[in-house]
Amino acid sequence: KQYLGAEVDKGVYNLLTTEEYALASAITATASRYGGELPALARIMIVHNHLRTMVEKITQREIEACTPLGLMQAESQCMVLWLVMTEVAGCPFLTQALGPVVSNVLLSRETFELDPQQNPDQLPVAAANVQAAVKAILDALNANVEAFPHCVAVLLYTMEQAIARQFGTTASATMAHYVFERFILEALLAPSAVGLSDMLPTRVQMRSLATIHQVLEKAATPEASFRRDDVKERHLLPLNALLPIARNKLSSFLSAVLSMGAPYAPLTKASASNGGVTFHDSDMHVLADFLRRQYVEVYSALCDMRSPQLAAMLSARLRPLVFGSSSEGPPLESRLAPARPHPIGLTRSAYQSMMPPPLGT
Image (cartoon, rainbow, N blue to C red):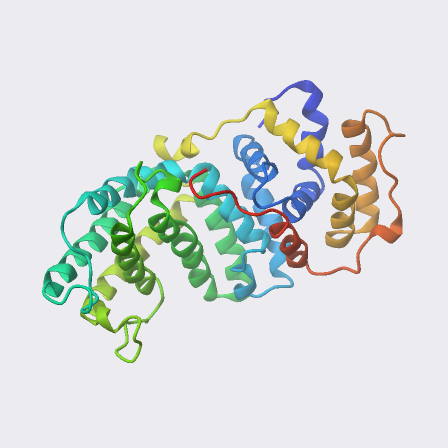
């Protein structure tokens, strides 16, 4: 898609989308997980239809030297992209699909307490309430799947295809972890942070949500069940019968989302809105400022992830765009290039470079 921003910013945009997205990949590897650069990059790529190709290049380069378990680490570039993308575009879907169910749980006067020491007289009632809440959440996800943001579905499908080519059947388990562990289930434990509820849950309400979360987490783990020999979950044994039903519904939801991300898949209006994502010139300004401040670090990442030659070429083209002149800015020397650690090592330092903001901000 033609660049939608101001002409003065087009040079930086062109560098972001050239050379197999090398500069965009370097930003993903070096920017803080909690800064404004990665959301800005995500919005630029979504609105200008570069997301699929960028993710293909980044994912393929990472899995060449990684395992499926490595892709699930918080510092993996794939995981960072997933977390940022779901924060940028995923909250409206969560609010629409899960908001009513979570609000009902928080406002309910029914008990969800399954610990016999806490609630010895109403365990059957509590078990029935937990079952009903779990089923309601799963039904709500499937009923609202057509509103799932297309950009997140594209990200999921693209990563799934790359992982399947490299590792085969492990791709489905990796994608299930992304969708459920790092999106749906996280929202249940922080409802006010993602817009599921306007109220901060009390301790009792959080225990109710934590119990529902525990059941869904077990259902999202293939062939897992609650065990009598585990003191932390033996009180949930009556819910084992629910797990196969829950897995089928989770599988249906995941399959539907993956199919939505395929090239040329039909789109609904709600999905195509991408959670209301729009592009502003300020996104380019955020990235230009980052590239100015982290000019040497980005060069170093390009040397590590691609080659010193490509790093030198892109840095030379970038210098006048962010410093105003080809003679301004810090010098770049070949000794600044690192000893080629895996890109995960780069994102680990970035991930730890800034503490997360307070919950709900």
